[in-house]
Image (tube, rainbow, N blue to C red; front, side, top):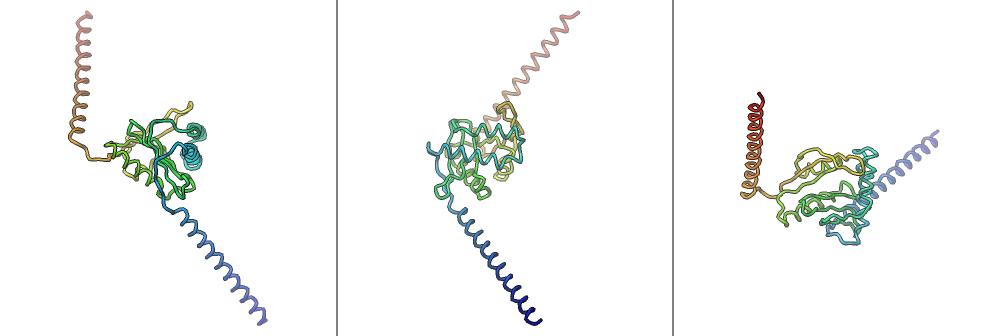
Length: 230
């Protein structure tokens, strides 16, 4: 009986040691993977040879990350539109880890608009998107762009909102006989200037004058019609 108890105790201790070894091995493996993912992110301008890496990143990001926000028809339209190389006049920045492209962002010219922001799903939530956005904003400020616009997907809305972008309106993007819901947003990158204030005032005055002219025209027309009709 005593020997059986000793055997059971020995077996229990052995099982505990095996579990501890497995646990520490998994912890070590986790930190090794994290250290690989958290290696230095390099942001650089895109080169012509990056075009297929860009296509793959945006296609995979949409397929994995956007599936929860769009129905199959909308998602298929998005995937179809992103399966060919980009041709818009834009400045593109690539995020790299170990010389491997893991994300990209673009600034459309001359619309002062973010044209794209995609991160490889395997590297999501690693601050890659934030660094790309900061680089796009820096580029816009170098070009003296006071306000940066973006038509955000429903998937990216919370990301832009967390980075200071204001929601303007909900809209849709017509794409391959379907409509893709998105959010028009903007962010002011530099303080408003006196010239911008004067420009906005002049635009408001122009709209007001036009409204007065239209009201005067229709009121005159109605008065004329009332006199013409016996």
